[in-house]
Each structure stands twice: as C-alpha cells, then as structure tokens.
Image 1 (cartoon, rainbow, N blue to C red):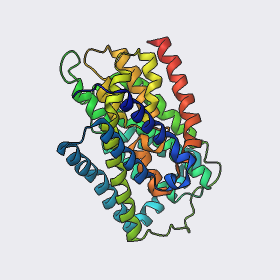
Image 2: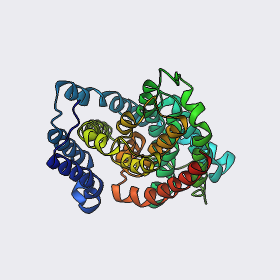
Image 3: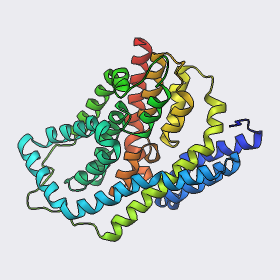
Image 4: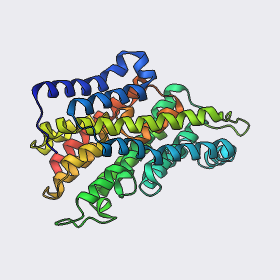
Length: 349
C-alpha cells in the first residue's frame, strides 16, 4: 500500500483523530449517537486516504458479525436465565463478603478473558454489574476497572482479542516462533499484576451489601437486546473503517520513533483500534523488551475511552454509560497506571 500523504490529507486525517477524541465530550448529540458519529468519521477517513475497496467493504460488513451475534445470543440467554445468575451472585457475595466478591469477580474475568475471549467476559461483567446495588457513579467506576482487567488479561493468548491474534501472527516466524503461550511468557509478569491491581480497585467499591436475595432486575425487552446488538455491530464496523482510514497517517508518523515516544503515542489506541496500531508497530526485528513496551502501552491505553476496546463498547452499551462519564473514571486512573508502568519498564528494561 502506498502510504505517501499530501499535506491536505495529513491535515484532514489529523482533524478526524481530534474530532473522534473530543467532539463526543463537547456535543451531547455526538455522545448519545457515538456509533453513528464514529461511523461517519470512519467514512471520512477512508475517503480522504483514498482506500475504498471491495475488500474493505466486505471486512466492514463481515467482521462485526461474530461480535454482534455473541452480544445478541447471550443477550437473549441472559434475558431468559438472568434470574439464576443473580441468585448465584447473591450466594457468592454472602459467602465471601462484598469486597472479596468484587475482587474475585474482576480477577476471574480478567484472567479468564484470554480463554473465554474478551467479548464473553465483557457480557458476563455487564450482566452482573447491572444487578448490583451501586449508585451510577460507582457502577461506572466498577465497569471501568473490570474492563481494564479484561483488556489486560485478554492479551495473554491469541484467542483473547484481535490485538493478541495479530501479534502472534506477526511473530510466528524467526526469531520468536510465537505459539499459543508466547504472549503469556512474554507479558505474564507485567500483565497479571495489572489485573490484580484493577481487581483491588474494584474491591474498594464493596463497602456495603451489593445484592439482595429478594431483589430482581427487570428483564430487558426483545427490542432492547436487538438494539444493543445493532449498535455494537455499527460500532465495530466504524472502528474498522476508522482504523483503515487512519493507517497511512499512523504509518507516516510513528514508523521510526523510539519505544519511549511510542509508549505515549499509543494512547491513540483509546480511540483508534489497538489492533491497527499493533499491525503497524509490531515487527519480528524488534527486541523482546521493545515488544513489552509497545504491548503494555496498547492494552492500557485501550481502557481510557469507550472506543478503545471491545469490552468497553459492550459494557458501555449494555449499561448505558456515556463517553464523558467513562472518561472521568478511566482517564485519571489509566494515565496514572501508564505512568507507573512506564517508570518501571524504563528502569527494569
């Protein structure tokens, strides 16, 4: 692919990035219809880059099918059997107490997301959180912490999320010969403490009883389940278009930067699919310590905003969390966590 960009293309694509980052916080309508807004941004980005093709259209139509189908099927299953899940959650909380329940809840989903996929983990998280007795602010914070844990844990195997799938595919040959457990061996010592940290943050929200054996959550309507699956489909299609349209700009601007600079530039994965950035940055020629730098920053930055990760998208859609509320809870915590990781990585590696 020819990635040479004219000045006007560079300016326009930079404008798309800024619009995707800031307009949802400045205009309520864009925040309420975030899927449509990002879809329009994706169309503009691909048009400016001149990258329309039959293959891209097919990918934008086909790729969201699996995710939205999982959201749809599990949505109807939760609608039908959600009462049993609520009862199980109540028994679990009564057994260990609210703090330990939240700790193990976030820890389990974070560590298991690499096997059950980030999609399934996010759907389970949203269903459980929906039934907890927390105020709206606490629910947003809990959702953010759990999604950070899921986003981190999912990178440990190639089945967890698209980012890990792409990385393993890129490093399958010399010199790494990456297999199923490659990312676990490379990142485990860095990722697992992060999952534990966010589980501990989640546990701090368990100051009082979270469930009530007599309380049940009203089941969703069929229309609500269908609407959410449709929104997730449009959201994923939008990110595919946005990622492809902005790829030339990313290749031009980040291709030859140091790992320390790339670490912070990767905060763009808060709005630009981190799998897209990984496909540009990850090369077999990179040393293992640089791979750790890049991958840690990508998975952490993916939790900063709703578009950054599939778990964020699913949970925000199911729980009705707005962009502004998500950012208020996630950005300070996420950036602080990235700064701590950066200092430790620079010192150790």
